[in-house]
Length: 468
RNA sequence: GCCAGGGUAGCUCAGCUAGUAGAGCACAGGAUUCAUAUCCCUGCGGUCGUGGGCGCGCACCCCACCCCUGGUACCA
Image (cartoon, rainbow, N blue to C red; front, side, top):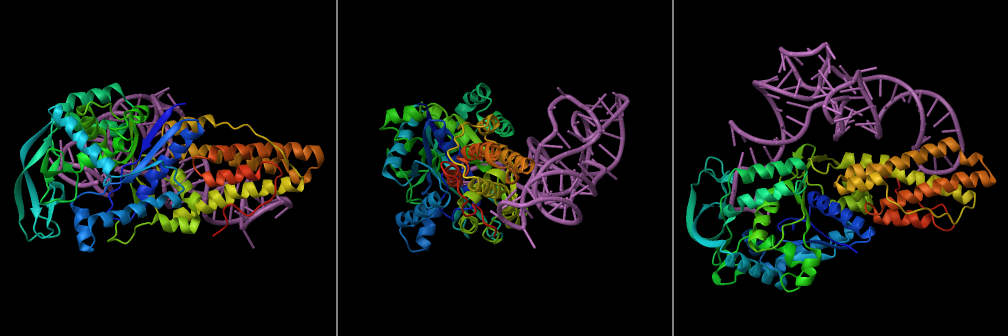
């Protein structure tokens, strides 16, 4: 039995779960379920990234202590498990004791490898926002929200990681493993970034300024900055460093991440792993973003699509279907509620749901029972899932649905009687069983319903996807 | 500015090394009644971002330009 380990990125808990993250975690879930059905033992990890100044401030603003603030958000994100019917095995919170110990140990290993040193670091700071700002957040060295204020520069001594040392090892990693990052144009992108030269990055902040973080193990004046905290979660969730056996069984990981995370996951994190003397990740899958009617979803625009609302209206499997069938795996996807509705009616009500209903009724009328089909994966589906092409994979199943519908119209089983009718219907039932079987990773609840309905005595049942 | 991805039917997208433009949805008509006014058949619908170039021939190759998206590092 093989071990398989897949993880999402850990969302930062300063906002509600949005459709973009729902896409990432549903995609990971499809892969996890698929591997389980292949007979593999799967660790499927997700969780929450809970440290940092933004969270600390948000908690204070709500008069909460940071821990109870992140507890609330962790519960919200964890509730996606039920709403989206996710099968993750691990939910790693970066504020957990186990994780903090792992983050400290990770730091220690990199330090022992002579990759961590102290250096003065210039921070740009907007007095108006009372926040650190990066160059990319500024226009003409001014804060866009407070253009009348000067940006202040604060110097402080931070710890740095010798990222620059790993330029060649990273390039070797990409060279040796052309599938390391999917899709290929993202691999190309990260290659070019690494080739153009790497600067060491700062990995700590003064504790007096950022009290909410993981303490640096040998310097109580500092806490780890995000990289040496959140990224370590991918190994701390396996019990590293204490549970060496579990770690070695499951590592390396397949990581799902958004295109904004390309650099962190496929370069910075990999260099950190090299420094700590650990094997690199197995593969990084980079997906695109979701826009609404061509615009980026944002609270201020009020065009955020809430995954919980969609589940309430259309159901869990309908949303999972939409994510797999209608979104591009690697490119950006534009989503509108109209599009979701159209897809629901065309593919689920009229397509899958209608086929199941009409064949079930015909079977009932002919008292058909005890048909057993072979449980096999469509070869194209296996191929596409291996390439993380979710839309092409699920299209294979819809091809089967279309063929079955055509067959019903061609054979006209309602005009047949006795043995001839049974032969035709048995063949159709086998096709539907195959559809149900292949549907399992994508729409587990629907797949189970179908397989159950078409085993033993076949009866007509309530519509799978009622018209809305 | 630089780097990357994209600009193909009303919409979402396929189009491998160049060889008479495809699918699904939407729309219109027909047929059927087992089915959730469903399914099936037929049809409508594109000067493939613009302008040049090399080809017997280019959506696909080359050059220039326009537009959209993302990145341009310590933001998760």
